[in-house]
Image (cartoon, rainbow, N blue to C red; front, side):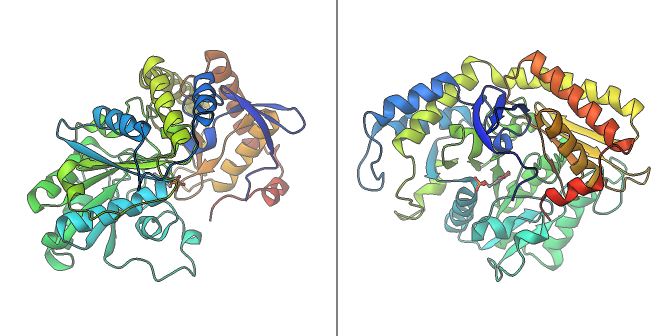
Length: 428
Ligand SMILES: Cc1ncc(COP(=O)(O)O)c(C=O)c1O
């Protein structure tokens, strides 16, 4: 599957090159993974040095220092001043599976509540939680039992057709009514939710929405599982996006940018929750691989040293301003949503907000032809995904934004042929 015929040969900072030597600015960063840019010298050094010491040791049988150092770091960075424990895995998907297992074993309850529009991955647990694209689940059932989906606070395209704030957060009232007729709250182990839905098209809920979910958790003994696979490590302008909402989750899930793309996921939870796990409840032979841990420690060090959350916040504001200017001239831009450098540009066909999916795909194609890697995503596939490295230079940023503006204009003015769609494969 590919969005356009691009074959990467190498990457450096915010640029990538294809096999023919063509240069591109990278606004995809491997799907919000290369937050610190491609091949950051400190990561390359950490990987090289560790690979000369030892490459593998199964953590289930004997210790080494790196996973402990990393666990201490993760515990100190994540919200909550309580004692924490860390469990490792190999991806965001299996970390989500781990969260389901943890929530069930710690509470003795089975039901899990997830949200429409969410993407959590493709292993069976994560896939069951996911509700963002039909193609992901077709012919794969049955999935896990006792997982329920409820509407997320998507206020631009409300599931109930309402307007915020006049709606009075009907989506929360809806969950409360389900607690009365379908899902006994005392049987619910956890809510699992992204603080900002990524693949749904950068859906930023009102502050009260997440705080109300937290209230429902506290009132009913339900665990709050904060899914930060895409939003973590500075992407949203904070180390973790939940910090925008002032919530201390019981469990936090990370992956993607944690090790600059080397395979790793992790669960960070209140210590007592993991004490209910009987070893080896969530074990992987290659978990917390020493090279991956070294890369992760180096990545986090760069995020902190280069003040990347703050940089993402500042740069994100500049990007949003630039799109606001474009929106005044280009009616196809329906909505601009973003925090830090997690930004989505919602393209529409008309004032009724009809999603402009093909136009979004064509914009990405034309942008690629002009030297920018960018994809479209979202519930309706019509949102331009703006996710550059957090330390992108102002020059590369401006150049990329120029390319996007020119590409949108080309599409609007009919200069990009429908035939390019045949070469593209976006998720369905
Ligand atoms: C929010 C979120 N959760 C989970 C995943 C799955 O992670 P992985 O592909 O590493 O299994 C993704 C990947 O895009 C994601 O965006």
